[in-house]
Amino acid sequence: MDNNKFIHQKILLNELLNLKNLNNVKIRFNLMFEGVWDPIEFYKNGDFQTMLNGQYHNYSKNKSYKEGQINIGLVRLKEKNQWLLFHIGLVTKDLNRFNTVGYEYQALTQYEKYFGRLVLRYKNTSQNMVRLATSVINQCEVLQILPDTFDNDLFPGYEKVNISWSELSRVVTKETWRTALENQKGVYLITDISNGKMYVGSAYGDNMILGRWKTYKKTGHGENVELKKLSFDYIKSNFKYSILDIFKSTTDDKTIIAREIWWKEVLQTRQFGYNKN
Image 1: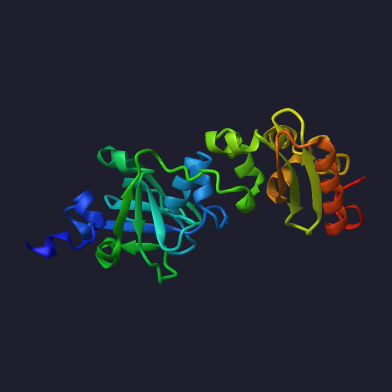
Image 2: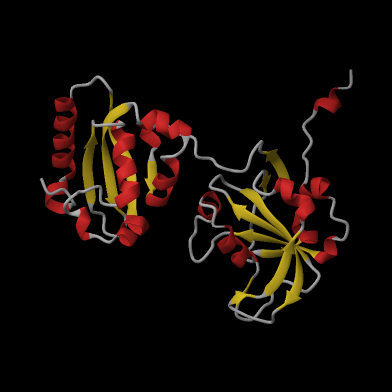
């Protein structure tokens, strides 16, 4: 038996795309959009226009592309050296603009089946985000083709929850999160990343943690006195949410309240945070 045929062989990006003239192709490794260094969040929130604006952005002096060039758009994932393909397009017109979107373009529809599904591995060692395909495409390894478009919003476990407001607003609609949060009473923590202030809250009413967090999605403040003093936009930009304690749905509410009080004392959120009582 020839054991060599069972040896894992890498599948490279262009083995799928089959682009003929690589001298006319560029790849853009998007590390951020609009100053945000977590670019995959734009994809998960469906803000594709911001991503495309970044893909076709010119800096102050150098042009990213030429008319007639094909460009491949990759966005960095949170996993090290992993990228998601979100766009392949053709530059149809050079607008001769800088520090803004510099081109008109059209998506190449024959590759759309891979958009949001093709995950690559590539170790980026350059500060230049726009690269000639001839220099990097043979280092872009296909890791997987997802069965559906990228989501990555599976519930990670109670002890690993640490999410922004935008993430919270999205995951409370996801099945794995809903199942986990609507069946548990608990004590949660809100942290203001701009100043370090914290708020300790408890959940034991309808839909338990899920019910409380859906209220934060809707109002931002959740009817909490000190949080009402902050604007919704401020909350959206600066609040993170985590879980301190979880309890079965049959646990007496007094136990939950006692733990909430204990955490307020430990974290001193009355003296230095947003807890009023």
